[in-house]
Image 1 (cartoon, helix red, strand yellow):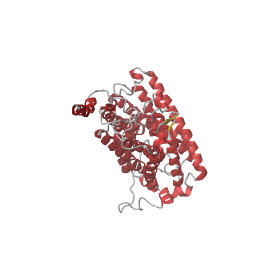
Image 2 (image 1 turned 90 degrees about the vertical axis):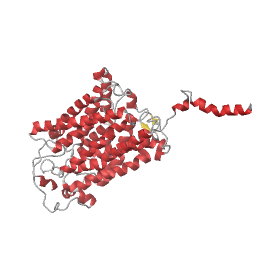
Image 3 (image 1 turned 90 degrees about the horizontal axis):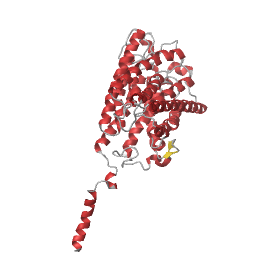
Image 4 (image 1 turned 60 degrees about the vertical axis):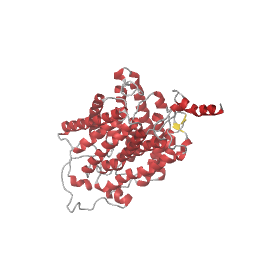
Length: 467
């Protein structure tokens, strides 16, 4: 009898596991496919910053500022990687405090380990989610650097990036993506960073450009891109990496990831076409720089909507983004006279704003049941929610960026001197040169650059870009 009782007790756990609905049957379990997908996506987003943004921006500046521009992306990669581990991640995604920021429970990644955190994903390790989000935290301040390129001194740059990441990016990420963040609770939709990444960086870039003022000789001296092949290569790497940026935000290798992949490519292609044709009509020539800038504008605009819209809305979002961002960099900037060196605001601020609003127009629960329907699918309230999120992101990024720059300015000289600008930041800030006076044994060639694309294209000799 004792033997039968013992055998029955041994079989009891097996019998209980076979009963559906028991608590432990629903415990988070790591999915190796999802984990591999998210880690690969994180690596793709890393490529977007270095070398993507580094080459995209590095090719658009004058040759005397090439290394300093690339260095900014490289240094941000290192600085924010450490900041994110020490305190950035817990502020952005830690246990909620007043719906405004995460608590400090996860300082130094304390408690963030190999087990899943079901609040964000039940099928991947918490550290995989952390690493994926870290790459977003890295690229966002790197985008800002395009607005103040060629004129911020390096010590001030370091202090600004560290403070901006901590007091702007991390809280905003919590509002939109963090569990119980107030914009998330409001119902704002941002699949991969229209507000958190692009509006915040674009608007902050505009404020930085205004605070630092125009570059020496802006509007009177040629400031054309010195190496368009660099820029096109950087744009190609951005397009490539953006599949990890948007599709990876599904956090699972599933149908939603595939949908986000398709609409990402579609919007980028549509925006490249519309920018080039708008430029062609406006200035009489289609430019390579315009094509590169247009595809980036499309990628920016589709980012918040990528997990909520289908292919046809993606075409519309991309076509509008190409034209709107082109007008922002070729008409708005010229009319208002601000020196957004590489059009961080015109592409990311304007493109991100359009994308966030378009999400409120075209979002559909048929694409993502966890989202919401937009205006064109019977829910006008979603459009107003998106507009609120856009307005909040604009104001928060603008005010905090202005304050941070003023605080940094108390301790560091923000802007390079006129003499330092004349010599170039490569020499004055880093003691290095990207090129010798001769390139491959021959003098720099000549050519023409047509206005209207991102950066500072002006009709001038290409060889003068290195002045």
